[in-house]
Length: 342
Image (cartoon, rainbow, N blue to C red; front, top):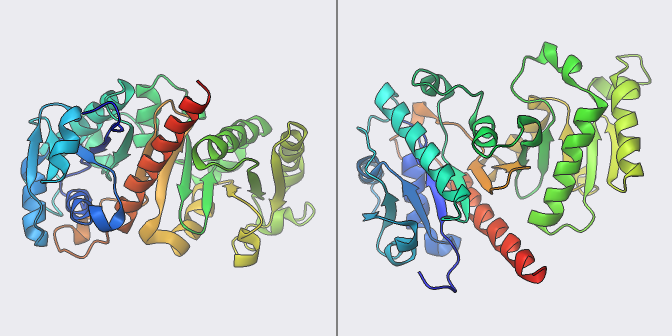
């Protein structure tokens, strides 16, 4: 690889029984029309070949021994690094597949941390299957924070699509636990990370953050709850005092209309579904899960393993393609900023 060529993108295979392998292959087939930068996959050569064949794709699998070989191999087929593999049984996850998924994720993360790849794109995993083989994290975001030596509080999930960006401030917890987890400190910490990332990675000089309320109608003056007055409004005021363009608390039921979406760059939502329902309703086939606050770049398609349609040739590759494109665009922007600032 010449000095002028950017580093390739590393992709973890995800659960081999899910739709990840066939969508990675489909992304390679559409690489030219989608304008995708070169990428390589960690392990799963047999899985990718079988998934490609079942989907009817002309997608050769090219074994490479180092990420630097990706650029030359990418024109001929999807480059695969590493011998880890498993059988291809779409829709039927098993322990062998989970071990492959974990090995792929672990190795891909290490390569990006070591500077051998520009960014990480993670295909969907099955958390329950991974737990059986020793995966002790709620999800890939928490795994990545741990692998990077970062606090889980500083790893922020943002869902990004063509028409909307949302951030759930609480994620994998029961709805009943959300009020107890919310605090001014949590809101301010995550808002700072989001604002900084929107500037650094998305080129937005002065990001506008809209914070939702927790309760219906943002509490309606305390009639439906006091979290807005007690926690959220003071957090907004503190952020504005720091120079961050934050607004709210807004009534979540009206924040995602076309007119309202034009007034902010990201919506910070109080719980998981409050953030994910609008992004999936609007941008499901192009939604990308981006992890902010880490020293590495990580994106993922905003959908799961979809075991029920794996191997049937009907899974849409749009989100995988969008995740790869966003990873490479973010890497390029960071590289430009690094050069600009010496």
